[in-house]
Length: 141
Length: 150
Image (cartoon, rainbow over all chains, first blue to last red; front, side):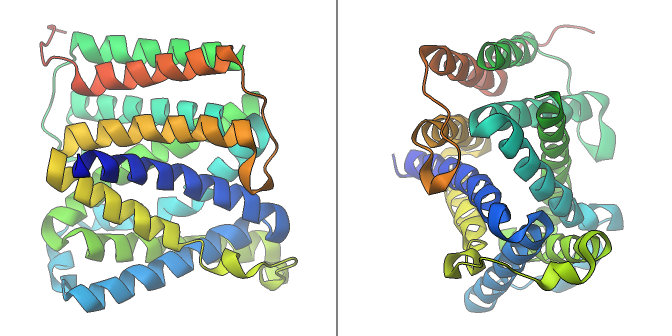
């Protein structure tokens, strides 16, 4: 039960974050918003690191350099989701965003890119993606 | 409308790619070192692009409200809850619930127009749409592992 509450809250926070960014950008601008929210998030995460003494910066050397730059995508993610929410609202934005996210992960798994274990396509994955697309079509009619 | 959908597709693809990259980092360093790195780089990239696009305007924060400064803390809430959820439930189940929860809260947000966003009237069509997407997410994530040869 505890786990379910955490997972539900996690999802709620993800949506809240996108909505808060869209709201803030109306006042101070989109890039200003992306810069400030990620700066405060960075500072908070860094402070938590200091407190929990779970610093593993040395281990970063063991990571293939390409994977270290994933964070830079955050700039485009925040910018794009703000633009999307302003154009099509929160519900449709989140629905389309989730489809793109799951579909790309699905393709990467299937092709075994980035050293992922190559997975075969399963019927439920195809059915799931089809249902998601049908749902988005219903939302956007 | 199309442009909004394209932006959402772009954001979603990058989130998917970022999740994969981050999981590769996290294996070696743990979730908080990864989160610190990811948000730090996101900040640097946004700052540089912002300077390029906006110039000095990047520093002109009109109508700044105090809570805007701490909105980034929501991200800390995200990581804490997802990490805990995965600890209790395992990745597949926890992520499935959080995806469904994202959509449910999105619909709530549009319907109530909280935080002064434009209100999108709640209709049964929207509810059905969200339920079909949620069902699709659950089938995708939790469906049997029976593979078809391809």
